[in-house]
Length: 531
Image 1 (cartoon, rainbow, N blue to C red):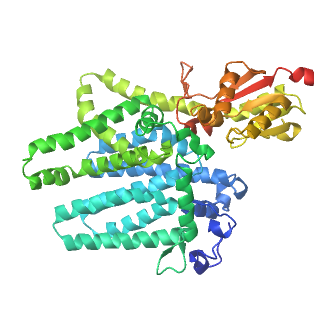
Image 2 (cartoon, rainbow, N blue to C red):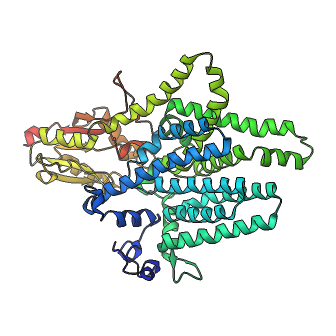
């Protein structure tokens, strides 16, 4: 990427070198606001070691900064909605200790930036509803446009904006003014989106036209996420149960079990209170009264629950409900859980300080355990050190296509060039040619290395599509092949003080594969005789 020489070049989709399509990148389905920000700030001396040559580190820093911004916004949203400082402080705390936000803020991806601008949009939306000022409508549009410039999936938030304006018109009883607010938000959304992410568009600023290449990229992405596609990263989704799979991962791993249980109880309680108690309070035969009870009196809880359920249900029934797609509702999990705790749990704890102490101890147990993975070297680094120490130079080792090869290059220890590396293709279809090539490669290996569960974790779930590979992994793990396990390197979350590990192999692949994968190394029983 090259920084534009003028504003006109920056705004031009056909000439801007911040546009991936102009620098020989034909497939890009994210927004360019995150890459543009990191590109700009990576050249500043202020960042010292976060220099351009370590641009991933600059990106991670920005990811952490924006997610910290979400923590702050959660406080102001909670305080605005429920007019109680304790709810805001607790909500910020609960989000800050949620596992998925902690993990994603370590990565240079678009998720935390997208989340920040969606949370900011929600803040401006509730300020518009409560204060009824034009200024907040403009800020809402600018923020929502920035969210779209991070990732086009921000469009899922559009129904929440429409619901917010519906609540506004019912409270204000001025349809014309609300329509003006909505049109103003739409105009500034477009301007913000168009200026911050020109690669989605083609031609001049007006009239707006969507880039045909971007549309084609979205179509390609949709095809990759279908059961008819054998796109390797999508294999893992072929046998999951819609809604149940993402719910399990949110409760057990994304939030952590204590907070996951609290959040589940809080959401169910709010749904019950809103849709049962309010219906009972009104005359169910009078739709106007019921509608008034739901929309007006319960608007604060309704708009949060609407967003939580909308995103969870929509993403939960999709082919690929990966954990990070649900990040935008984690701030609102925290708000609902904080409200439930402050208004309903804490009053019961007044007579027993031990219960309040236990409440906080249980909540911080899982995040402290998860942070243990960042207090020691990455498992692939540890595995690389093991390889240099135990596998002689010149040995032939394997590497799976679609996964990271080992060993990593480590200063003053070694480089991968001192080994002969054979690239295996486990995700190729189990044709006779593939089987023959795979078996020949195995015969030449001194060491067979699995650097994560990316291949065996996915393929083993669909034996009907990969009969050979599924049986191969089954035989490998049971010791029936000519390979013996010589090392297993893990970096599990670990309960502090007790030093008890929490195996998270059952979690979604993406939860472990990037920052704490299990590495397994097998030695060919004939390796010594071959050497």
